Length: 426
Image (cartoon, rainbow, N blue to C red; front, side, top):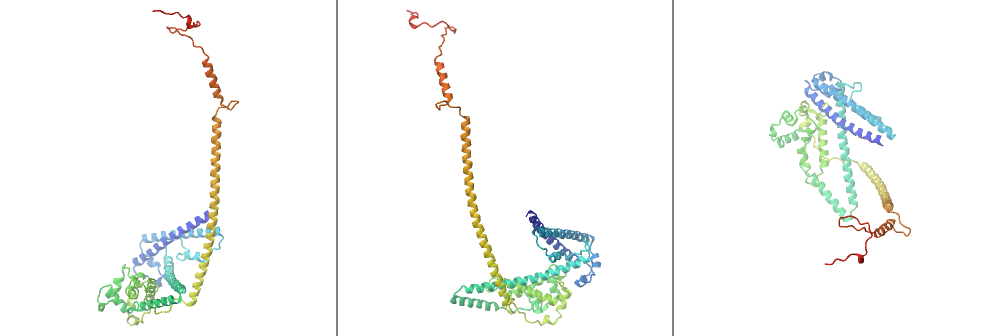
């Protein structure tokens, strides 16, 4: 168990180091893009033409990249060893596919220096991670909607007929109220951008200039609009539909709507699929027909539910299984609690018996010590030192005192009786 615990601790440390190193790799990728004399597109990355651009960066940047790569290789080795140790300790079969995914962003044939191949792999892996992140967000929202519908149905089942009809009527009114909102412009269209130009930037919509608009909303000045900068452009449109003060407006739905808008813009504007919108791509999108005459944007309320009835049924079955499993665990914990209480009572009884035995033993030791300090007794049970003291007292009473004269000299002659003493006359 100690080995398993140490392996788990080591695994958490490795994952922390991985997150830290991965962030530094992404930051250094941005530095490389800024310091290059030419913009590096992902098409060039995939064709392996990054060596020349990578050579243009400063020596200190390359040194730092080499150091980070060696740290990353060391981290992966530690992670591999920790996983092997934990697997061997638990006798569980290892998932080699998930383990190999940890090495996708590094060139396995070069473990010391950071080269163009590493940058290509890093970009590809980062792009996959972002795509997977969006897919996970959609899946999370779907489960949220299914859970909300499940709870609504269960709540209605708990009501009587009259209250159920009132609740259904109230829910219907809230949905109708939520649908009553101003027109939502298609994200990335001229109407949507002009509204941001007017409401957010405070400029005349008749003087709208795409290039100036791009510069204004490139907040970090890196020459591209990233996903966060794009999503910020949709706030005004989302405020038309969602208000956190209204009961009928769900903020989780608002964030899902924001994600849909960003994906729509990326699909139509991001030509090289690097998840960044350059100035050139942005200007080209303004020349398309859809920019001036877009299709009407459909919100989540206008589209089909994000889940089907079959998916909802599977989700409810999964919830039921989880509830049953939690019930079994709760019952098991309750039984263990009762067992612990019984053991606690038994231990408490043993503790009292032990304390009683200790007290009795201590009392016996005190009595034994008292007996060891007491003198021996006589034949009648009296203490012997009392007889000796009485004998000494009797001997003292039999001693005759020797008279002493006026000069302090003892007189050894026998004393005269009082009638033989001379009488003095005055």
